[in-house]
Amino acid sequence: MNRRANALENAEPPHAELAPRPNPVDPTAPGRVERLGRLRLPIAGPYRPWATAYRLPDGRVVWCVRLWSVDRPLLHCLPTSTLRSFCRLNGLAALAVEVERVGSG
Image (cartoon, rainbow, N blue to C red):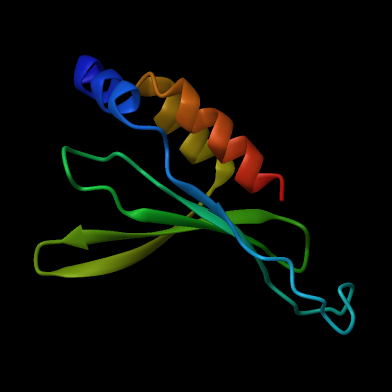
């Protein structure tokens, strides 16, 4: 699987989007969740779900990914460290750079 992941990485660059920065009324207001951006995760072959990064009011960054479970997609929210581990275990150095760039907001 590691060779396949490297082939995917070399075949096309990671598709990342940074969310446009709106001008909020008060960016320090409690209870506001900020969307930082999103990128595609090369899970298997053509299956590349979006991972969206959000900054929570307490400053933590979480990534939300919709993964298929038998007959329907389920939302999974995970920390940046989990995506870093995914990139490291699958040899996806370019994706790891994108995770850091988008996740740092």
